[in-house]
Length: 170
Image (cartoon, rainbow, N blue to C red; front, side, top):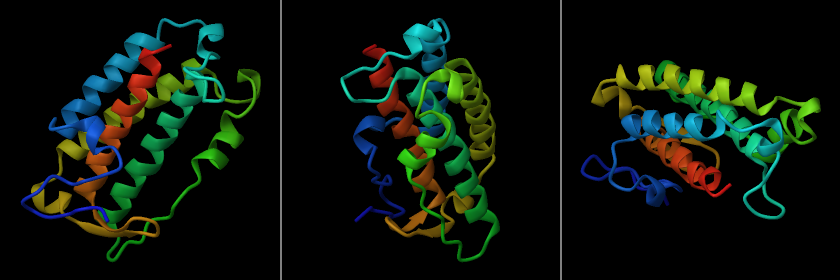
């Protein structure tokens, strides 16, 4: 059960990664670090993984860009659609469509990084504009149950930090 109480920080699958940091500034900082690391890698370096059988750096960047797209949209839908029920998505199916094969068959690492940086900036500006009442807007997720936009923002920040750690090991 994910905790959502006004007197408590939202507990997400990535709470340990985020710690006690504020989510939106952490998103900006983390994406800046990801850009600083991956922005200087060659296409060959972007095809390396942090562990056997795990995604490559390019695939992690694609996943992060996809997540910014999907979860930013989820927040916007929750704020504009009464009683919004979000659509779950299968990250592996999304990866198979855009990044499952070699870079020549999907998005390059540099394209994914550009998309991540741009969409994260767009989402952070949007999140900064929200009032506490707007961040408390509820919605439902088929796997996680009752959530709020604030929970989603915290999840997104922790998710970025989680994957930054993987990229830092490469």
